[in-house]
Length: 222
Image (cartoon, rainbow, N blue to C red; front, side):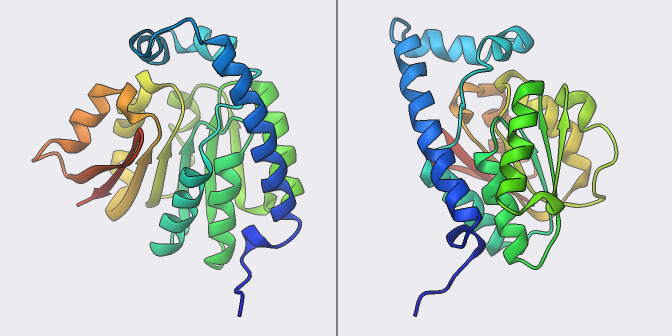
């Protein structure tokens, strides 16, 4: 017997298929665009403090999570029975759809996501609506240090970081008072933020953390 979930039912399933196809094409273009740079150069670029200019230059690219990471997000949200989720870095909404689908299957909740690029916000909102998940998602447009500074749930069950790597520690510091004991943090491309890894892996830092995939860090708030 096959158990249907929001991700495997229409209209969400069709949106997920389309988004991954679009993200794959976008990734191919990005690889061609960055082929002349070394891993060290790419890491320095992605961790640049001038994140406004960087992500402005990358506004046409999806920069989406992998299928495996998207599945991990869904699984973590379901396993923890999350009801409140915060996401840093919406882009076109691949990860947002998976997190919102988990909330739907958990019986409801609230996902606050933030994205710097206005054009991406418009498209992400359209994708979320097409997936039938708009009632669960609040996508905020602007700098995360401003958009995530107020009007948030008192307690956050799951935090996903996938925006400017140079802001990972600052966003964590902003939201840390709302992370309950047992909440889960996932950070994509965390290997490009040594400062963040040092923070969540510190023995007395209040987290238990490990790399669970290429560049993906999973942390538990103690």
